[in-house]
Image 1: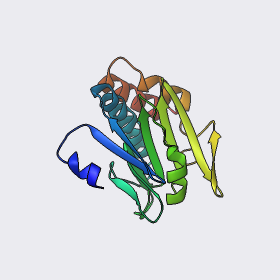
Image 2: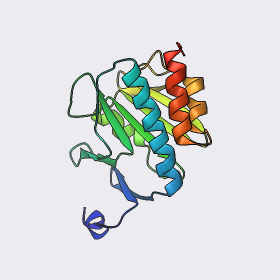
Image 3: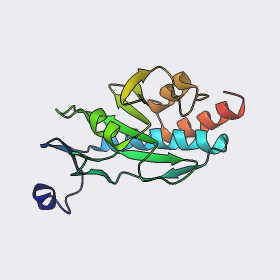
Length: 171
């Protein structure tokens, strides 16, 4: 906590903590662009399918008692507000030494999406561990191939507009 406080007010720095190990990450403009594209596309999908969601943002999540805390990129509750998110989205440009899934498992996060090297990996909590899955169990109708293509599209505005059109056509 003292180290985090020394970075207070500095933009573009995130922290993750797991069992005594602190990871300090910097956030690049490319990271923010990619994250905002994923968020906009997912929210278009939820809007078009009338899925009730609550955007939690990227607050610090976890506690000393859990031995895990992380500043999220983005998170959502589905249907109702809850203490912990149903979905966490992480955009990874540099990998650290902390296994974030261990921390998210302790917090009971249902699904975690990692976007790294233009690949979307989805992990779903089953019992007390995560399984890598090929499709989101929270969004079983999400056309992932199309969704992923629009994440790397040349223009965010066009990607969102075209993705919405695809969904309206039965995507």
